[in-house]
Image (cartoon, rainbow, N blue to C red; front, top):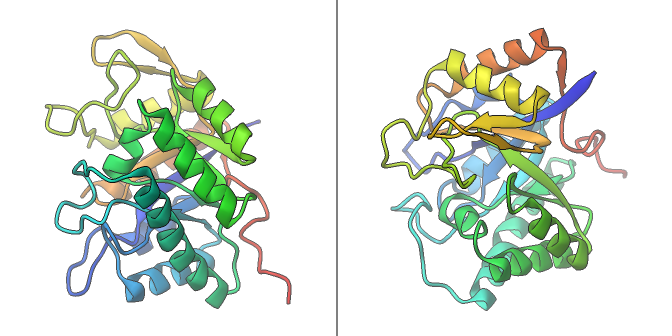
Length: 264
């Protein structure tokens, strides 16, 4: 039986502001990317989200981004590589603290938003992120975009001494170049659960996705992501999970066993 991980970006509420439906989403996913307080989230939200993930048996990953709370981390920032490395260490370290408080291990690191998208064309950015992860804990997975750049990203991660998991997005449109279509374009965010589920099944079973021009792109993905801030997120993950089951695809965390309690 084929298997795949189903993840979502969650823990993105802040103070009095609620974003997403984390508790409902967690019931249908196998791994969670939890915001680390810079593009979204705060210490109270991080603590609560880790607890909810543990209660649902969901693998936990850090979701660090640019220091851009007002822009939700989706705006490009002119930061040096040294700054990026420090930003990663700071944010991942904070979430690891909450994981330790809940006696659970962190399984992966997935950059957020503009920081994630920059790695699609920037080897130096991939390298500094990989090196930061290796310095924190080389057993952590680096989650990166599946597609044409996978071989290069995989090589950089291997050189850094870490492992990589490649990710595809059933709720996002793809350009013919294998990149995520910019959010401002019509149809860039897929909100129909049936359409997203069909795309997820094709990604998991065939390793492919249809681009905006109708061409078929090969995607060797081990995890599928649904954005937790999308209003339809719960309906999307529920339908995707049901469709994957119908296609005889098992949904499991990226690292089986990594969500187990830490040893005393």
